[in-house]
Amino acid sequence: MLRKNRVVLSLALSLTACLTGTVPIQASNSPLTIRVDGEPISFVQQPFIEDGITLVPFRPLFEKMGWQVDWDPQMRKVTAAGDGLKIEMTPDINAAVVNGEDAALDKAPAIVDGTVFVPLRFVGEASGRKVSWIERLGIVSIGETKLYPIQQEEKNGLIDNHGHKTIDIPFFSVLPFSEGLAQVWSAAKDGNGGNGSGYIDVKGQLVIPCQYFETAPFSEGLAYVTVLISQDVKRHQYIDTTGKVVMEPDILFGSQFHEGLAAVAVATHDDRLYTYGYLNVKGEFTISPHFDFGYDFSEGLGRVKIDDKFGFIDISGTSVIAAKFDDALDFHSGLAPVKVGEKWGYINTSDGWAIPLQYDDAQPFSEGLAAVKMGSKWGFIDTKGKQVIKSSFEKTKPFTGGLAAVQIGDWEWGYINKRGEIKIKPTYYEASQFSAGIANVRVGWAGEGPDSGYIDVNGDYIWAPRQVDFK
Image 1 (cartoon, rainbow, N blue to C red):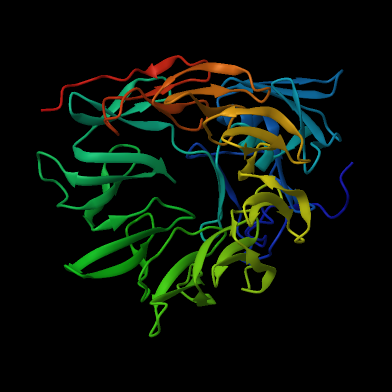
Image 2 (image 1 turned 90 degrees about the vertical axis):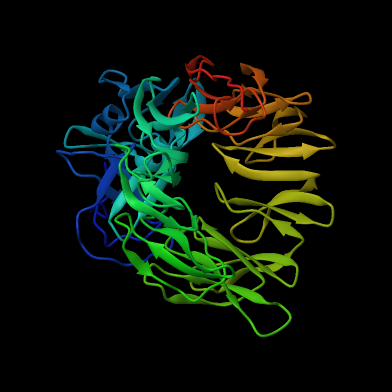
């Protein structure tokens, strides 16, 4: 039974407490919107927060994802299947089963007024979907719009997750969608929209004109763009999804917003040339520029570089892990890979060694596993440091949706499951991470275009690569 500290979801929740239980950033008391693959969910019983974890009714969540769902009252078990995955959860049990393998939960599912509620972030990440919190708009977003850019007969278009072509795009280039908008470059034959980069919506309509010298994907409702004033002068802006300029900071470089903050560089008058600080969504420096380099925040901590050493700060700019490492990467699952001398290990958020220095290279955790390099080969360890997949790969990418892309030999990329078994044979020149059951693969070196296709979790093409002769 739930304790009395259960609260109805509202925007008076923190940026990451809404999803992970850390770092309060106050907002208004407006209702929260939850979107799956770009579409909002309607709930009869509203989601709520307990102990900083968001729980939502299981049936509308999984059905919006397009999964089959079942509740077994005798076994008291929720089962959901889709995108090549099967997730089983039991109320009051802090563990789930994903494709037959145990997975820990930060919060057990719960029954409230006859409805089973499940932890939102776990479901999103277990399904291979990115989970993000747009505080300014009051939106929790799971996954992206299921539209994918393609090139056919030297023309660009979009397909859906079944491989059906839905829209022709009259632009030179189009990138994947982020928060319902996709970057496009240079209008094609009809000249619509000018020259440069802009954004289209899911209908293929140019909603933000091609007027920018540089664009970045939308993140937390904002995108970093630049306008070329002269050959050596650029105006730096952050725009919202309508194209409105939200801020125009005096900076040299910008980046995407993560957890309500964006790392930006400003000019200095000394030998350093520039320093990094952090802007909030109002365009204010909440952390003054004084770092040699600043990186995105992750799990409430930002990675920074000071005098060629790496450390971590909190959202107030306070140093919580001193800059003493020769290299470091972001925190995921409460652990961050760090380098001292020639070896890598993992620290926890209290600056303690969770996994000792021993690896020749290391990557962040994803779905409970992290890629580590021993000698010339990569394998995977769990959060206890146990090697669960032997070091036998030339290169690896993180696990998403229970699968990881791995390189075997000089160029052959394929996919393995969490037991290290080959799930999709290594036949690709390049292979991306899975998202909502779909991955982009390439069969040649031409880059984006006709040598690019999309596969499902069984390795079947939903859109096969189409080779053309470039003249």
